Length: 175
Image (tube, rainbow, N blue to C red; front, side):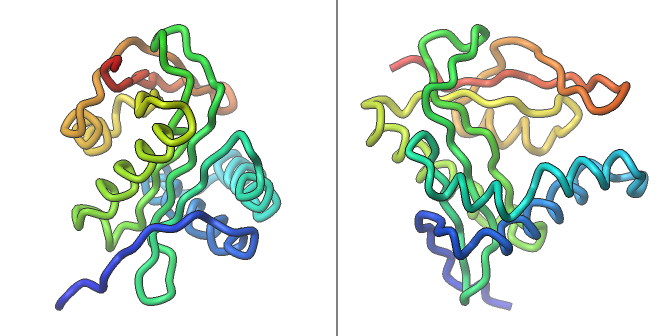
């Protein structure tokens, strides 16, 4: 089966419901590997809301780009400008999220989104330098970012309920 052509464009407020559904799907596929409990359900339903995506699509401090194929969204990248990270000095653009729907993983969609995110960072700040956090147990994502030139610069934690999850802070080389 031939994959459809995937293109990237800036998100619009009209994409908000679709982005919320896509984000919940990808997050649960990645992190709810033992099933969904109340804590996880509450987290995704309060974090990945249409209102949040609509606000991000219109914020001057954010670049939200979507990957689409045949009229369907298949991934997105969310950049936050002015987000300093002590473990990634000299870089103040955070790649908050890069999610690709499972059927489109390993097809170049993530690479396309990352390339477009770095281009958006360069257009906004004059540098394509950025940082992100990624769960240390998400080996596929860690390898993806390493393949694209990001390196671990330290550890931080994502706290959900009583649990603490180690996350790498990864950053592009300084330029």
